[in-house]
Image (cartoon, rainbow, N blue to C red; front, side, top):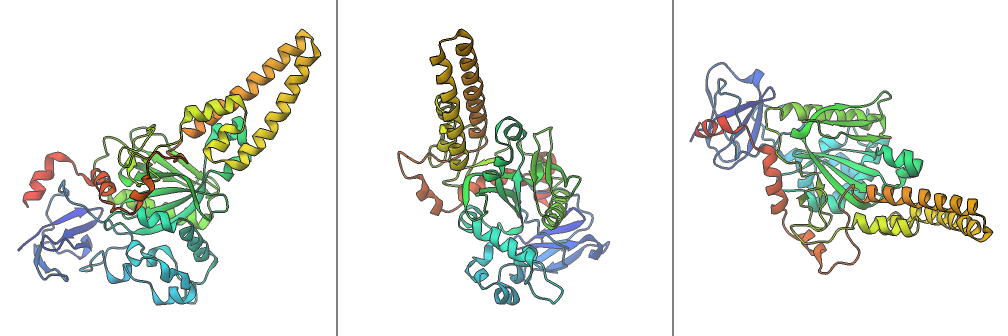
Length: 409
């Protein structure tokens, strides 16, 4: 049985038609003539054709492995799915992680002594520990974590019109690069547990990467004039590593088409990618917090809407400020002077109005679960990730005109 290779990003991607094991071979190691290789997994013969056009079959799910291509070595190699011995010796807690979900050799870097003990690796392990429970439920079939970083999502409206530095309390994210997509999981300011929102961004949607003037940012520029995503306050080594990782990923998928619709939001209950602005999950029927409810609460009493959204510290501070404003307005009403009445009304409208608009904006950023659910959507977390996998398939769809020819070969 023969199977042909596909040239992508300077490497030959070969998929065994018998057992679906994927191989990546550098084009420099491929001769000008057709060659026949043998699958190390099942023994089937695979035809390597260097003159094959760079087309990708529409139904082919390619695992774009991070790192240099290796001739004749499966992408899903043993080293990528087991705990490196030295890593477990240095960090015993790694033994509690499910090996098939992580490429430890890519996530953790060796120190000068050949071990893994370092400040950088310790911080990465802290980030993994914070999102481990959610992350392992989110990953789809054959998806592995290859890179990890952490930063603060940059929302100018929140910084300049209300919260300032307090935005760091609830806009912290663990950024995870897998072999299929970029995941962003909202965590608390101490980076010890997940909080509200989960997002994804497919590599085919990213046009280029930036690090900022000081090298502490991650700027994701999208294709088709999409709104960019900016993360600040990254550690420099993480900004450097994830930028290099994403640059290679973008290069490897640049021949794949851009999805017609970006499903950036992810349901916190069943982890299925969703459209923006939904009131409930279309897969598990989990109900999300309503921007209108948050806005009305903040209009009545500043801070109440933030508490509803789960921003307790920010809500408490705004409630204190709101009480002071109401006392000021009440004193204006009791004075009996018309000027004081007008001043009090203006203060109330300005403060409450700005807070309710800002709360509405914050509530619309992502999908956050209501505390009270009519059913029990969280049970779907334990279900297989087949639905999420089907939503990712469009990211690996090739240009249609040449797909049939590629499949025929």
